Image 1: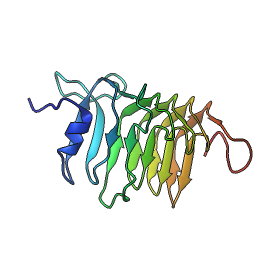
Image 2 (image 1 turned 90 degrees about the vertical axis):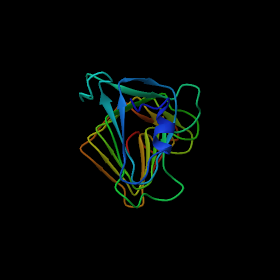
Image 3 (image 1 turned 45 degrees about the vertical axis):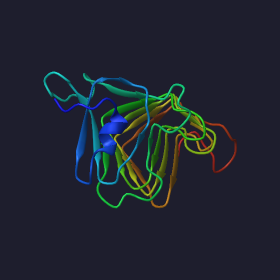
Image 4 (image 1 turned 120 degrees about the vertical axis):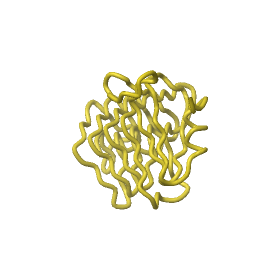
Length: 172
């Protein structure tokens, strides 16, 4: 009854402490994170049941030329969770996510590329947890991790760096 026409419009109408619930489907859009607003995918639009595998929520970056999820104007000061999304086909200067202090959890990030960062994620002081990152490529391979960022319990598979030599690798 209160559904928005896009993820972006839903997030932009929220305030610290709010949560955006995303139903399964394919969304061709990018989202700017609002500090303290959670974005959770994997919901059935009819019943409200949540299962991130059965009700897959996909953000597809085909033709967008930017990060799919971004927070970089200032670090998150309030708990901000992005959970249960599949991010794919992000391209250009940014990969799938620019995470500046938030938590990216239980997501799949695949087939993304970046010319100046991590193909999947640029993690600046945030947490990346329980994610699968596969088939991404970037200057820093899969994840560019900086400013005390934490990466834990993730699967990093079949990614590559576009620049050879240290510190660039297919991983982190």
